Length: 240
Figure 1 (cartoon, rainbow, N blue to C red):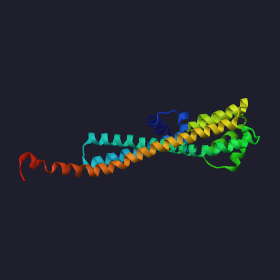
Figure 2 (figure 1 turned 120 degrees about the vertical axis):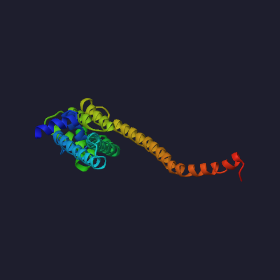
Figure 3 (figure 1 turned 120 degrees about the horizontal axis):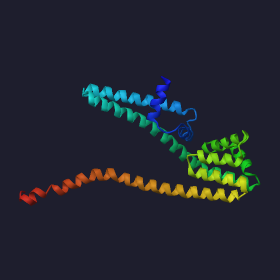
Figure 4 (figure 1 turned 180 degrees about the horizontal axis):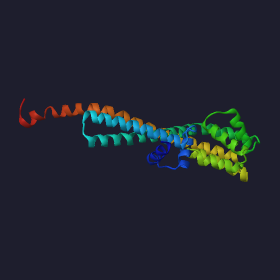
């Protein structure tokens, strides 16, 4: 049964184990393995498919339509699980963007006081919490297990779901290898993050303002059309 579940799960979720494990890590679902994720996705798809088939069988009672409804429910259930994973990744990336501005300033402050890149990261990890601090904590864990410092930062850059965090980790890796000016670089990255957030907030405000006009137009437009169309019969036909 487990082998059959694995085969069907591979058909439902065609992405490889390595890619899927990276996505689960980016979504902070480290307790799930690719195999368990596929099993959950298959179970959810089977529940939706069976429910849709039962509803269609009760209402329409046509075998072909029942099969189509069951298949549609199966696909919908599988897509819901994938969409939930994508939403979790997007939410974690947004959280990293919010935290990264402050973390970069803290790292820059530590570097400006004479600390090295790894010392600055260690002090921030000891005193902070959050998604960025968790990723930096993984860097410390990898270095303690024997991985090189620059390699650990580059691995964190590959695994993070947020491009701004990847640039920060790449800068830290360059600072470990070549001794670049980390303070100025971290502050410049923070400025880019601030500008990007300001631009995104402006876009969201414009989008919400446009969305607020939709109910007004939907209510007023029919009323205006009625006022315009009401005198047309008397004008065209000459009735009073």
